[in-house]
Length: 162
Image (cartoon, rainbow, N blue to C red; front, side, top):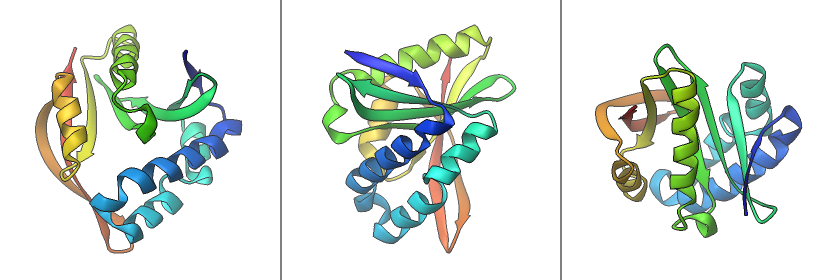
């Protein structure tokens, strides 16, 4: 059974642990160990997640049969739900869970009268790009963001119109 829990500051440790597992298994081959380590320490760490929660970003802790298997984070912008984090463990992928979560996000966006859902995805993350395209997202632009320490996020921006 799938459960979606709206995360509280007390969940930041569990979220950061999931990030560590998922990022190491999925992103090391794309970004390299150094950048993954840097991003885990700066963007996906327990203090960074707590700070996000304090700023009003919404996190969902996703569980399957009582086990933590992923997390989602989003915030509302003017006409858009910006999906900043959408991560599942390797074992949870390919079971329709991503589609299920996306349907829930579409409901949230519609309830908030948003016109679209936007996200960024690394240009070299081919399986994820394919999954987003299959869900109906369209690439709208490219962007490169300096994240410090000599690293950049080299991404596509995708949009799903509601």
